[in-house]
Length: 442
Ligand code: S3P
Image (cartoon, rainbow, N blue to C red; front, side, top):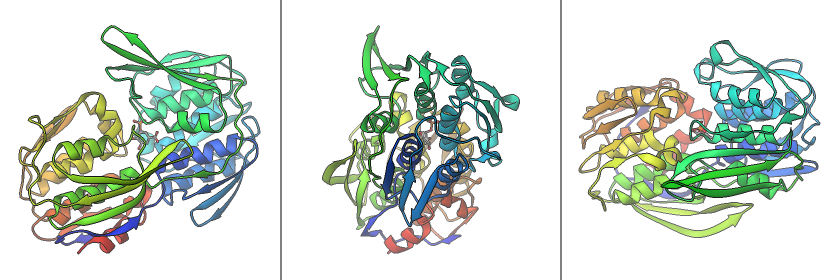
C-alpha cells in the first residue's frame, strides 16, 4: 500500500463498531436465554472469528451487514464442537472463550494463527486450572486443549497482569462455578478499573450477579470484582458504539495536520478507554466531545478534532507511564507517531505488555520509526521518541493491524511517499481503514 503525504484531514464519519464490545456482545448473547439483536457489530476479521467459533459450538447466528441476530443457548447449552475452534489472530476470542469452555461438560480445542500461537496463555491456564479445568498446551501456547468441568470451583484470583482478557476469562468461568468467584486487580492509586471493563458492564446489563468494589490497602486500592456462579443472563438487544481504538488513528492524524477538522460520530467513550484522549489533550491536541449519551451500560459521543500547527503541552513531563498504560495499550503505536510531532517528544514506559501483542509492538514501532528518520530509543518496557521530520520509507506491518494503521498515519505527516507491506492486516480490526483514510484525506 503506497501512501502520499496529506495536506489535512476533513470530514464527518461513523466508524465501525468497537472490537472489544462486539466480541463480548456475541459471546454473552450466546450465553443468554432468548434472542439478541446486535447493532453495529464490528466488521473485522477478529469479531468474525468469534461468531464462527460460536456457530461451531451450536449457536444459531444470522448476519445482516453489521446487524447480527443470535439465538441464546444459555450458559450450559453449547454443543461439543466437532473440530478445533479457530480464533484466527484474535487473542480476545481465545482468552474469553477459554473461560466459557472451561465450565462446559465436554472437551474442546482452541487454535489460532502463527501470531496467536506465540502469545502467552499461561495467564489464563493458571486460573482456569485452579478452578478445576484441565488444559493441555505445549509450552503454554495455543493450541489449547480444554477439558471442561461443570461446575468449576469458585476462586479468588489476584490478576498478575492488568489484562481485561484475563479478567474476563476468569469472570466467564465464574459464571459456571459453584459459589462466588472474585477477581482482584492490582493496586491502583485511583478508584477506577485499571483495564477495560466492558465485560463487567455488559454482564450486569444482562442481569448477572456481579459486583465491583474498591478496597483500601496501604497507599492505594485493590479492585474486587465478584461474580455469582448462580447468575443467569437474559437476552437484551445491544448496540455497539464505534471503536475508539480505530478512531485514534484519525484523531492523531487530524490533530497533527494544520487546518484539519474531523467529526467521528458515536465513538465509545467508556472511561477505561479514553486515556488516549486525555494524553493527546495533555500534549496539546484540540479535541471536543459532543452529544454524549448512554447506550446499554456504555457511553458514546461524537468527537471533533481540529489540527494545530504547533502542538505544545500542558505539562512539563513528556513521560507516559504507570496506571494509565493498560487503558491506552492499543493506542501506543499511533501515540508514538504523535510523539514525533511534539516539541519535546514522548517517552512511554511500563508498557512491556506491548511485546506480547499481535507483534512485538515496541520492536515494530522502533524499527519503523527509524526507517522514517525519527530519533527513537528502545527500552525493554517502552521507547522514547524525539521530535522528528519524518521521511517516506518502506514500512513493515510485521503482520500486525495496528502497526500497519499507525504507520499509514505517519505516512501522512512525512516528506515523500511511504510503502507499507502487509497493509492488508488492518482488516483484523478495521477492514475499511484505508478507504476511510482516502475519504478524509485532503
Ligand atoms: C482487549 C484487551 C487488551 C487489548 C486487546 C483487546 C479486550 O488486551 O490489548 O486489543 O477486548 O479485552 P489485554 O487484556 O490482554 O491487555
